[in-house]
Image (cartoon, rainbow, N blue to C red):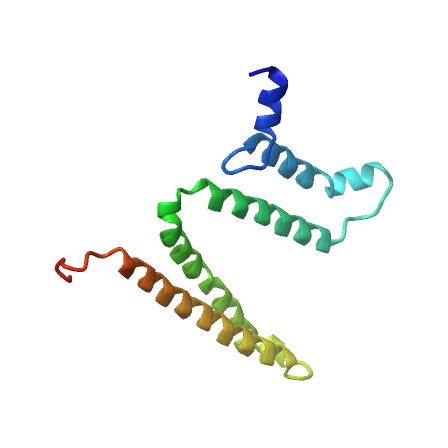
Length: 146
C-alpha cells in the first residue's frame, strides 16, 4: 500500500474508520466561532445560536461514529440505552410544564411542554417494548424461562 492510499483510507468516512478526520473536524468547529477569534478580527461577540448549532453538528458526528463503531450484535443494547437517555427530554418537559416562570402570558409554553412530555414518554416506553421483543427473538424456544 502506498502512502497516498494509506492517507486516503485514513480519511474516509467508512465504517469505523476516519478517527483523525473526525477529530480535525471537531477541532475546526470548536475554534471557528470562538469569542477571542472574533475579537481578534475586530468583530463582535458570537451569537449563542452558533455555539448551539456547533454542539448539534458535533453530536451528529459523535453519534454516527459511536453507532458504526459498535459491533452489530450490540446494536440492541445500544438502542435500549438510547431510549433511557431520552428520559432527559421528559425532565425538560416537566420543567417546561411546571416552572412558575412559564406563566407569563399565554399557556403556549406549557402546551408544548405537555406535548413534549407525552411524545417523549411514548418514545421511551415504545423503545423499551421494541427492545424487549428484539431480545425475546434470541431466546431458545426449548429453554427454561427465568
